[in-house]
Length: 381
Image (cartoon, rainbow, N blue to C red; front, side, top):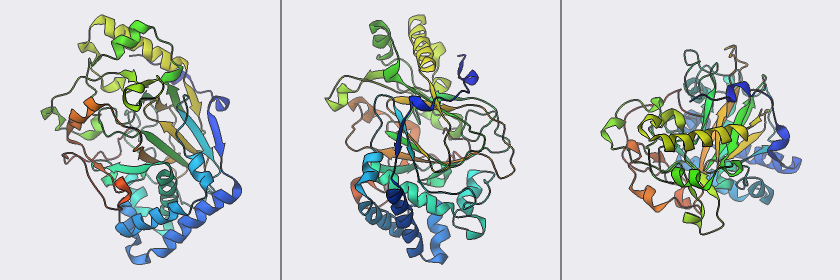
């Protein structure tokens, strides 16, 4: 399916809500993160930084979150119908993290190495902010189960549909659309973006569709498959047909509003009848029409409602000289936002999550059967 988003490189900063922490609150977040890092012994710090699920660190995150100014929770509330907002003023400087690593593996390995920067402290900042918003979680098969993922261009992956790509358009998608435990909120924090590479966002609540099109898209018709970064093995699971759209009132009991699961690159559209494909094509065109682009600056966060908006990234040319775009990502679950009852029966293709903050008990929990595949550098972002 052709996408026109590759042509949309203009920025629309006024179309995205912008929230700004006060200088005092931003400084308090960095101070609390610094105190947490200083509390951890130097020796074990590298091991803690690898996955960020160490019980001592989790306890410090819980305690630190409780000490955050109330302004942080207000800033980290879910976006409205626009589906995304930018939170500004996390104090960072370009020289404190060292050069952009060549892949997520080096980024994770170097994060606690003071000779290569100090991105571990920003991992802690992001976990504090994410915990103020909800329950941060990771995936066993993604970046070794890290709760904070590193998103950066990687040599050899330039043309893939992945967060490690650069030359190709990263098509708009719901993050981990195939899985019932997908995030409610997605947080992208910017360390470096000298070329003003834009992240695209499109809200389904700004799309204009007919009642017939909505009815077709609300009928479970096609599965959404795991992307290639999950490796092989998911073939043994029966792909369940899923609705592309549904009404949020079905689960919340609140006001009527559209919600979606959308990943056209991994939806076998050729298996649907022409009428459904026309409705899906119309949805795609509407998401392109309402698309806005955010070019994050260092210290800015993009908060995306993963139930309301799809996100992608415009193409760019990576230099691989240590100055390329570097984002960090956190998946967040909102306990107050239940999934559709039908999703409880989905198998999730064997992928399971790392959920250390569930119920606030500070213990790492997992869900569902796992496969042994490592999503590596080619995950969606």
